[in-house]
Amino acid sequence: MKLILLGPPGSGKGTLAEKLETKFHLTSISAGEVLREEVNKKTTLGKVIKKYIDRGHLVPDEFITQLILLEIKDKKNYILDGFPRTVEQAKAIAGLHLHTVIYLEIPLTAVVERLAGRMVCGKGTHNYHIIYLPPKKSGICDKDGSKLVQRKDDTPTIVKERFRVYTQKTAPVIKYYQQKGILKTVDASAAPKTVFAEALKILKR
Ligand code: AP5
Ligand code: MG
Image 1 (cartoon, rainbow, N blue to C red):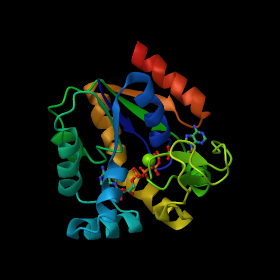
Image 2: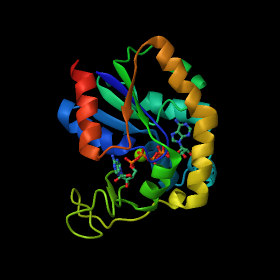
Image 3: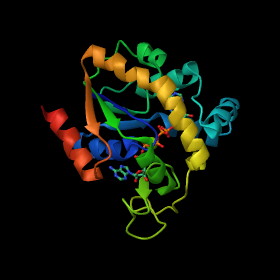
Image 4: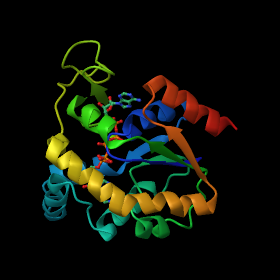
């Protein structure tokens, strides 16, 4: 099964991907994480990518598309979290037989509060929220024991910019998949377990 999670910054793509990954034994691939790994390697490409991420802008289509195609090369079942994010990126994977595109719909006001309280583990893989999804032990990842940190692009100014870019460049992808008849919308402002339950209903239909 090949799934896509589409939605604005902080809509809960990573949180839902983690749950679906366990439930359906899929590999979850987060475009943001793939890019941050490249940044951490401090490669020439990584240094270029960092400039885009830090400003809240999208990395050029050709960079991210190449990285994602490499990630999915030998895989049959996966969740793409945050890719595609432009119609060009969507066209680049038009040959894949996608099962469903889950669109996590949420207003900006809800997203700012979520991202202000988000904490991620040292590896950047597991997401928490100081109020909505707290770890069992304050400041420590339940899954890998690493220290929780805040993402640099989670400041209110950069979050607003990420949302602006989303509206301009990613919102058209919703229409693209609607026209293909594989887009399903979930109310992402609900509690995490409700969002998961709604996604399960869609996938089991
Ligand atoms: P990326 O890392 O993908 O960031 P994003 O899309 O802005 O999304 P987030 O990871 O911030 O949010 P999320 O939807 O995963 O929400 P989460 O589950 O964490 O991308 C970062 C950057 O990389 C981009 O800005 C761009 O520069 C670049 N990039 C990435 N993909 C690209 C592409 N395809 N093309 C070009 N450039 C690209 O949840 C957020 C918080 O809310 C957490 O604290 C969580 O615990 C909490 N939460 C989750 N669900 C709920 C709920 N239901 N109720 C209450 N709280 C909840
Ligand atoms: Mg994420």
